[in-house]
Image: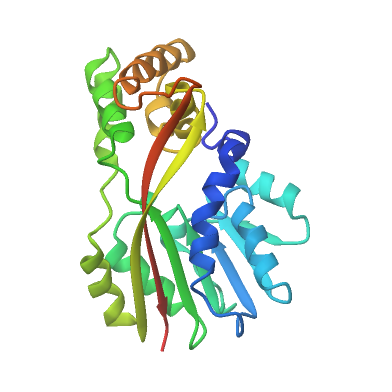
Length: 259
């Protein structure tokens, strides 16, 4: 299994783009001349940054070669680099915006990383972040339960323990308020309408949260894990008569402006 599958990820691009639009709506129309998309994935968020500020120089970075390749194909005129968000440096680029959509949940030590990102900004620049806040939702809880109960339990123990839940809003406020001149935080729960019953929930998370559970397994084990996971989902996400299932998806947002 690839480390990231850009095609799988973009199967639900319209739904995944909704929080990007909501985060962009809280940022100023003027003053963004240089922007960096941290964890740009296949370039869908980078493309929306370019649409919002067509005169800006926008760059992207990601730690997945597959995602960088997809982003370069999508936006051949944009500079994309392979880098780690936990240790990223602008190397003097001094952006007016550091934008991060659905990536920092994979990065540990937010108390260090967030002030470091703010320091990379030009004076008056903005840090804008969105992270899934859904580790206690049934879809994620059942991933861990299936991992712990199958013949693969020992190999998947690290995946079960790897993800830390995001801090509470007041935790992020305290971190950012020490380093920023302005902070705004909010939480939104989206209710995505997916066609195809529990299988659609499986397909959604195959592009993101299921990756650490599937990567250590053989193809046959992956198929067995997914079959057990789908069966477990059926009790938590009951479809309507036409097969539509509602997937609640909480997300945490914040913006911070450097003084």
